[in-house]
Image 1 (cartoon, rainbow, N blue to C red):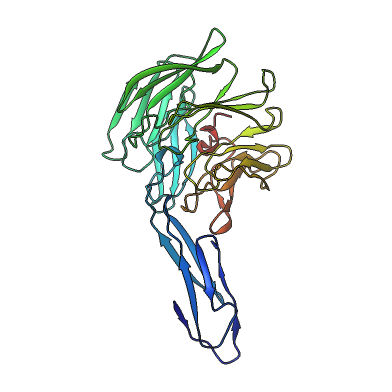
Image 2 (image 1 turned 135 degrees about the horizontal axis):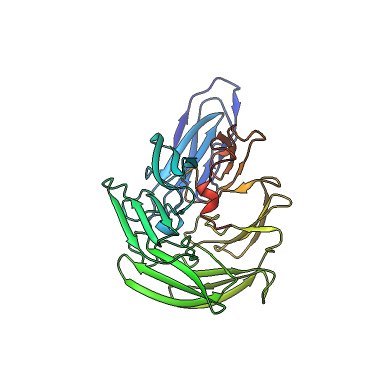
Length: 364
């Protein structure tokens, strides 16, 4: 309960931005001195944040959950504060200069990797809750990781030229991203994984032309095998997922590879990756909520943008976000974010000559 002090006949409203769990029971609308009564529902999921706006004064409520935010669903959180950070990679004489602007730690440039030979694969490989700067070198099939826990280099040879390392994530649920690549072999897609806890394994899942995807679609804290089949294969434009919790395989036809970027992520904050696409022709995000199966369409962005989804406000829900280049190659592009908690924001970062990891890790 909150006591409000206001002048006589001073009217005000009391609005919760999360009415499904942060519930205003009494005091809205209010006038003059009064009391606001609210209830906070139990939280069996990940930590969450809500606000109550009392006549322009904001009360912030932070509630822990019984489940930690799944490491599989974290994206580019270099300082470990639970929020996606802004990152752009510059080519400086073939050296990768990572320009990372951390939401809690500020600007931190790092020189790491080869711009022409390496694939940027940042993730939390040491399990300290912070994204590590990391690359996979195509010429020798080696992962290079700069561990945030102790600032040491780890090199691990895994894969060969032509492999796709973008699906490196936590397959064994120990909180550490695992080294992984996919390879097209005789028309099939073969997954090679070296788990930090479970060791080596391999599996055929998908066909050679499928697009391998990141994600924890069943919410068990382990990455699942998942692919998107494009329009030139059959069945066309279909998500195929093999759940790690029970090995159930599902197929969902959704979107079109002719117009859509494939952007699965946890948009409803239930700890499960949602099936999602971003349509490049109209800037609309289409997704299926794993929490209730509901279809949602949200317009955010425009043709020419790069989709860069992430949890920029740290509320456990993936936010709609795009990066838009500047007409001048050397001028800063802009991240536009529709925060699920705090609304719209814009941040100038990176330029047309740089790689944008929030987009490149999607493997578009």
